[in-house]
Image (tube, rainbow, N blue to C red; front, top):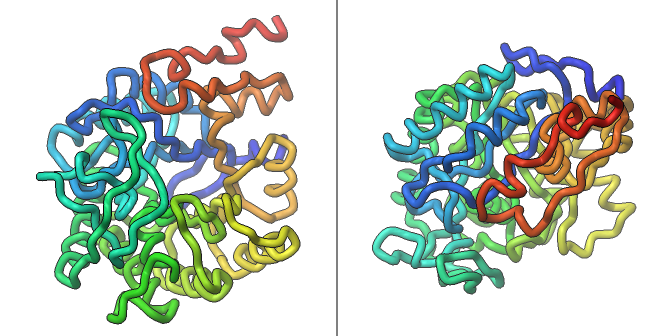
Length: 365
């Protein structure tokens, strides 16, 4: 795994390797939106990652879509993240906070005063979320006004500032997986007739303005953006993803953030395999900065992608859940722990901080 384990320069940060930890929602935060009692242990256990990207974190109370997910919009939440960041730093790691607004993928019971979720357009998603009573259909959203769009952009800027106050090394803007920014980008969820809808350039405007707000707080090398161009997760679709995401890359290239993090799975999307491969090759060639690939990568495929230049780093999700010392295991080409899928979302320490490391498992002793 010589390529995966090489250092990489991200802005002013020198990262130890190219095995990154993907953002992973674990639903173990406190009701206040502060990280849960085991979060510092969980993240510090995984500090050997070249870069940790935190679980998705709400930029505002209106950005919440699931129970027991953390926020970064209150003093209590900022204070709650500080020991997590300190623990990662003390273990020699680097960690970015992922900035999240779910948009229409929410339920009124999760929002202030049982408000309706907000979205670019009043189009209800065919999907569910998880509340105190279990799985429920998402609520009917309402379209954001122009004034509300501007205030939401300001929320991103404040959240970026709060992330810096909590001590994070940088932030990742969540523009993937069918959440608010992705809803603006895709024609299936954005039918606005103003400056934020219609042509791909207009649909990418919200993302560009969010990036600009975040760059008012952080230098470009400390900012990443995550996209999922072909995923139908959360009832997403686009009439012409090649055109849409070529425009996205063009907009982002003007701001030069530190990296582009691409979810390459085409979850639920009827997209021909040969066209899919060509799509991501073209996206990779058009993006001139650091390209982080995510989606179904194992050790061998990740090594090939980095060695042949298809990606600069690989973000691993499930493998990092089950293998807190994943870079060590990859370097020794040893067996990997299998993830316990039943403990992914919610629960206690089990399936969260109790996976053994290479040393603890006794392998090779």
